[in-house]
Structures are given as C-alpha cells and as structure tokens.
Length: 404
Image (cartoon, rainbow, N blue to C red; front, side, top):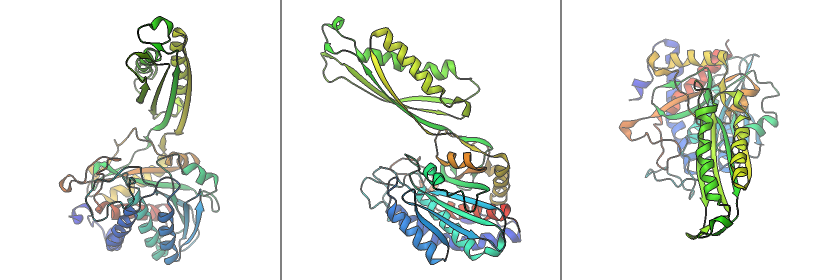
C-alpha cells in the first residue's frame, strides 16, 4: 500500500504529503501518456509539446526549442533568493516494448525502457505544486527538461545554450527512477555516483589470403584475438585495485568464409570508471596496446575513441541537503541507501561540473507486482507509487534550499 511507503510523521510532512498524494492520479496519467508516445534523442517533439502545453495551462513561464527539443521553465517564490535547478530527461530507447499494458508504446521499435517518462511526470508534478504554492519557498526554481540523455547527449548543448544563466543557477538536483532499489528507498551518495561513459571502435587491417597459405597473409583475426586478451590487462594491471573501472568489448566482426583469411577485423567496446583522474588514460593505453600488437604482426589499425560523458560526481553540501530531505521522506533511516554506485553513465555529469549539485536514485522496483525488470529491458516498468515520492523529494529540496 502507498501508505506504507509514505508515512506522515509530522504535521508539516502531512501537509505537503497530502497535497502531493492528491496529484498521484494526475502524475500517473501524464506518465502513461508520455510512455505511449516515446521518442528518440533530439526528436522528442510530442513530449516537448505536451510539457509546454501543461506549463502554459498553469501559467508557468518557459522557453522551448533549446538544443532542438529542450525546455526550461522558471518558477519564482514569494520573495527573491537563490536559484535551484531541477533536471529531467525526456528521451526513449530503440527497443520494442513487450509489456502487455494499456499504456504500452504506440511507436514501433521505440520504448521508454529507462524511466524517463516518469522523470518528466515527476518534474511536471513538481512544477504544478510549486506554481500553486509559491508562498512555501523563496528564490527561483528552474526546471530543465532535457533531450537525448541516452546519447549523443543533450545536457552539454543545453548548458552551451545558457540554461544555467539568466538567472544564474546556484545548485542543481535530479533523480533517476531505479529498479535496482525497492520502492520506498532513496539512494544518496556524496562523490562519484555514476561512471564515465566512453566508447571505442577499432579496425585492424591485415592482409587477406587463402586459408591454406597463411604465410602470405597478415591474419587480422589472430591480431584481434591478441588485442582482446591484452585489453583485459588494463584494469587488472594498470588501474589502482582500490579504484573501479571496466573495459568491455561488446563487438568483434571479421571474416566471410571458412577458407579465407580476413584482411580486416573490427572490434568495439566501452570504458567505465569513477575517478576523474583517469580521463584520457584509457584512450592512450588502448592506443599503446593495439599499436604494439599490430606492429609486431605487420598489421595497421585505426582507433576511434569517443569520451561521451564524464563521471557523475555529487557535491558534498548539496548531497547533504538531499540526504536530509530523504531521511524525512523515507519510512526509516535504513531506506536511505548510501552504497548505491553504478557503472551506468549519465550526462547529468555535465550539469554537475558546471554548478554544485546532487543526482540521486529513487527506488522503483516492486517484486510482488513483477515490476523489477532491469533498465533497458523490453519488459521494463516501475511501480508508479514512486512518482509522488519523487515530487515530494523535489518539493522538499526546494523548500530546504530556498528557505523562507
């Protein structure tokens, strides 16, 4: 029952919580409407139109068309004060939904499989509440509806468009619905929360020929096999064992016939790490390893390396504020989870590099309702009771940050 997740421990909590709970059916409806119309990166046109219509309906000042489909809304409290930004991402994934629900995706091959539909609904619920309760906070709240989190990334172009300026943002917060945590929990961590996300593609160029005459060739598959093995030593032997990192090869393509030695092999992978001091290191080390192996075999190579997102690193002061709010919202202190790191990546990291902030994880899994499939799974869904928890978290963070 929702009541077991949202206790009413004080009169103040009761007042906010009751108002937020009354919004639950509406927030759920918004989420489902967005879920039915998922859109890929920088094509969130219907989603942006829906957001803009709601903000206009509530008389909330906003600007559309930022970084193609992004939106920034501004809500002012009862008197001047600091500026807090709240960020919500809008895009979906190229996944065919397998859920048999009335609100399943109506767009073939596209699905909200990561909870961004819930993020938008939570931000809209927060916007509506704050617009109706301007007396409860001072200062200004900026709500940033961001495109393209799943890649190639909408945070950076939004920042470059000036969304953190006019007025200047003092701090920023955001959340991610998280099916790795049960409903009713909040993951809050100071420092690195999510990993850097980097991708690489490498083409190894040998010399093809007949499978029965290998001495006339440079076998790209043999070279690639050695590269695959050697890459595993980067984390095992080059990275401080007290620091976490991952190098994963996800693709390897070579050859077209059993009796032909392939002239090219193509491999691709991803790199993840938390420590910002490793920026640039993996590209350099991959280049050294691949180059050395290719040279020893008389092969050549082309390495394309893409450092997509830096690590998500939370600021201590803003994280302390979010943690204190989470302790007031959660049923017990044990439901505020500090050990919640993930090697998943997020371009919220660019906002956190620009201004102090905190990104936190909101538990949304419910095993009893079969709502615990992992993110990016074609059956991903979450317990919608988490939506009003998200609104309450944001509202209380605003009230605490922009204190009367």
